[in-house]
Amino acid sequence: MAEGLLQMPLGAHVSTAGGLSTAIGRAQALGAECIQLFLSTPHRWQHPHHTDEEVVAFQGLRAESGIAPNFAHCAYLINLAADEGPLRERSIDSVTASAQWADRVGLAGVVAHVGSGRGQTIADAERQVASALEQVLLGGGSCSILLENSAGSGETLGARFEQIGSVFDRLGRDTRLGLCLDTAHTFASGYDLRRDDEIRRAVDEVERFIGLDRLRLVHANDSKADLGSAVDRHENIGFGLLGEEAFVKMLGNAALRDVPWVLEVPGMDDKGPDLPNLETLKRLAGRPT
Image (cartoon, rainbow, N blue to C red; front, side, top):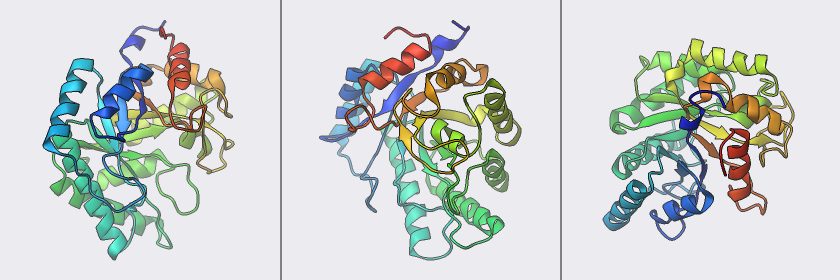
């Protein structure tokens, strides 16, 4: 086993149905060492709302369990690249609220999709993203805002690490800005993560344009979509076109060893990340299950 590999927290996205604190029990049932969750319904324009009692209960259970670091994922409806109008304002408001609640709950950061240009030039769309994030950072508190790389379909931004780095440059490289690398998205956007040299290419681009210190989370997903397809379709670990050996290579890469990994797979019963997938991820990392 490679030196330092044991420090890598492996976990999953878990549900908060029944209350925020229930996420910890679900994580423990999976053997998760870190988690991602939704602070509010991801398909609606709804701000997070949790009672003080639920926040305290979550924090207590998290401390007892040692499950950390933990993250929230922003609503799927947001588009930080939207031009002026209700969608832009709602997107900024939604991400800001998520960041504020993440601070209150004690999460390490919130994951946000970069957005879609929708008819704008790439340069204009990048400016819109930077401007939106500037407002989020002004009101969002101290937690990290992690931009997630995309598969690259349509006019979606973020399929190239250089573009995410460009957005960070526009914001003076604020220390709260970070990267969430999704393995399925990276593969679908053209990086063949089944090969060591292509893993190195992706890591080298992250280092060059973003900074490896800003790589704060990995979404561990196999892919139903082929290399370079620009299609975002997650698959269970080892059942997609990446396959188990790709995860062995990625989990063993020196630059990725200490980064938290969370599953976003469909699950064997299509109910989301589950015990078999996390056990597989641990096995591929050379960990006891």
